[in-house]
Length: 201
Image 1 (cartoon, rainbow, N blue to C red):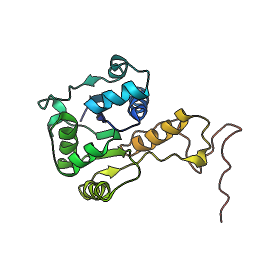
Image 2: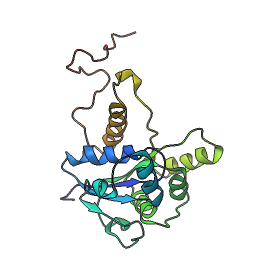
Image 3: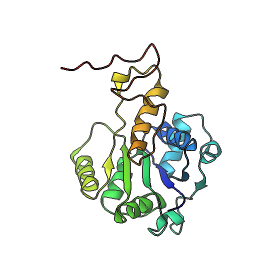
Image 4: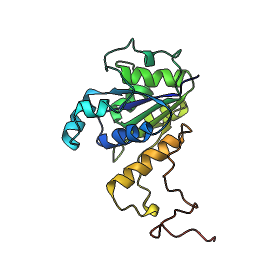
């Protein structure tokens, strides 16, 4: 694959900012970003953020309409590193778990799984019922990764943006895409406010 590509799906769970942050971080990398946004995500965008649809889509290299099941990302012959769904609603999780490819977002996720590529779902819901947990187990058994965006408080974040950046940066790690400025446990962060380093047991 001469061009590195990644698919970013934004579905209708709360946390539209996770998808935006993924687009922002990927913009600084040598990777082609293909974006698909669900109808529910458009609702949360309007409710949770001041971003317009146009501002969000401008961050991607290619934007695919949700209903276009003939898009490039709907085929396994279109090479990608995989797909990040940020955030991932329980509806999208269930569709992926049960191979219900009724829109381009879930079809692209299904293609990633069938071709044994990396699928990372930033599942955003709490508390979880048994159906949610079983769907997470199914996706995991199929090769996907369930990645709830849990705050890394040991980093002593000073803003909500730092919390979101760390979660999305760790998710991108799973594709071999490194965010250079991401603070990591055990590594020296060169500022006077960094968290103390572990000294052993």
